[in-house]
Image (cartoon, rainbow, N blue to C red; front, side, top):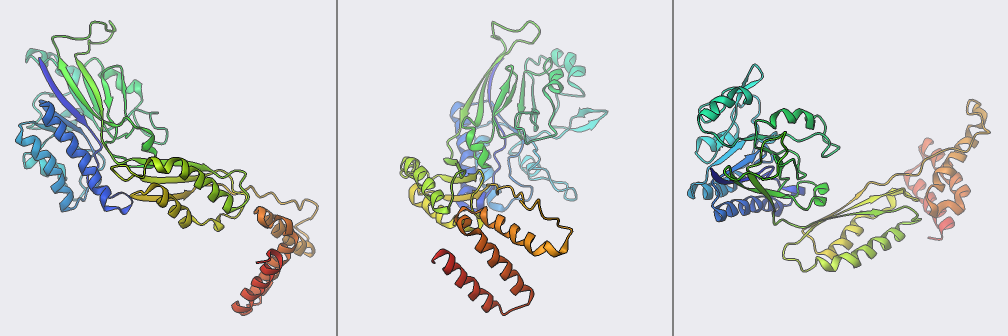
Length: 411
């Protein structure tokens, strides 16, 4: 037997990432590119291993975009076999998902087995497998079945550390003797194991961390049961297919981690960011597809995070990269606060004012710009606190702070 198919997963149609409408279109274009490739390669069928849609309650345009790609396959007599992912499933009370609607309209064949005694019981459109794979093996061989493909919307434990609750590799191993190709989805990082387990990853970039996985896309699989691999593990079945991972054309996603350690003022951070922009920006200014740019500030700040001008940094990135969308995320840490008042017993109320002054000084000194005058600023903060407790006029408090700022900073 010879055949070919395309395996995709996690297309997440309808995802308007960051509230940018063009990102909605990007996810549809990635799907259409794959359906066009399926037609071009004249595959025998397409499998979708879950999460065709980004959410259960899709809008009309998302449905139209899905049908546009699926109709092209239907018009070329290419069947589409799909399973529901966690994003596709209907709400409990509604009972009918949009994948079921597409199935009823003839665009896909939806595999949705009921379970009995821990084994799948198949409906009318799933005639091959009656119960467990092993129990059905003899009947399948009698029917002349030479190749077995299983779809599951799950991943393997440990592929992406932050995703928990997935089956371990040992739990998958019992399937190996009964399955030629295990088509996975759910985890957006691409991976494959031992020539039988395959996960293509997400065709478009659903999250910033996915930008590091550049080989995401889909699989083009050619089956030839008459010509299995000549070199095989004698303890495992021969492999009767060749799976080629094809990388999708997608919008560039630039992600950069900018360290702030050792910088004593915001201007020094802006200089470091601009150095990065000068190096990398020109490479992307004239790209056919405008990129997405995300900068993560990491490390320990030596000054108050509130003094960071994030809009200024985002504007700098826009000027150098000409992106579709830009964002700067502050993921920095504050300096640890360890008070030095070890010689003062905080249980003695008579020393509270002195302890408070020292705490103010140490808090102020965490921002290097105020370190030379920390004692004076400690007194200012104590005075501001007293004025607030007395419920002084806010205008008087603000004027006092302006005067002290001008006195201590010359500004």
